[in-house]
Image (tube, rainbow, N blue to C red; front, side, top):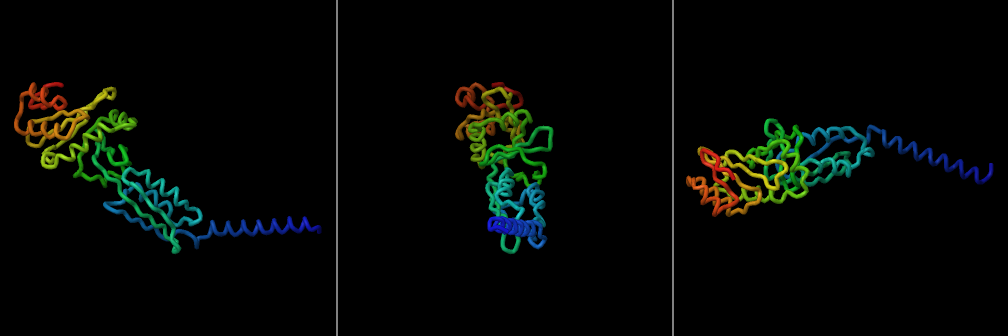
Length: 247
């Protein structure tokens, strides 16, 4: 046997040996994940994530891509960031940081929701309905309007209103319902704020400053019915009592 043939044969044998080792490693039950440990900085782990992560139980550690898992997790609107690693004890360890949710969007006529957070506006998986914080501002919205907002690249006016509403503090607890009225072709949407134990509704454009919104609420709670005064002085907020004044 020539020297070149010996080298070729040796190379084939080495490659086969390496392949056998890799095959054994990738298929050995002794190298399967034996547990999954998930921690979160606050609140509950989204149920839809638990379903995804359960797929990695008893999976071979060499078949697990931590970066892929991280991206899957961070696709969940409730999660801001995730760290994923496999420990020497064959444990899949995952650390989650919750996103800051500012408001809940409820689709009118459906038991379906979206959330407005520092990540943006996202429709959520129905499995995650159970972790919705009912203490947050809840806005009722038509599905077509939501779909239109989801396509918008700039939600600055919408976000500004939510920020302002959240700053009302003493007044905001009086609001029993917030509805978003808009034709999807309009450049501005209107929020309808309905108050507890009153017959008062405030319609506010998306673009409104904090002081304007506070003043409009004060007028409503103090029984202001002079629509002309409201329109003259607070031209972006319209008070309605008993009947619509238009605007």
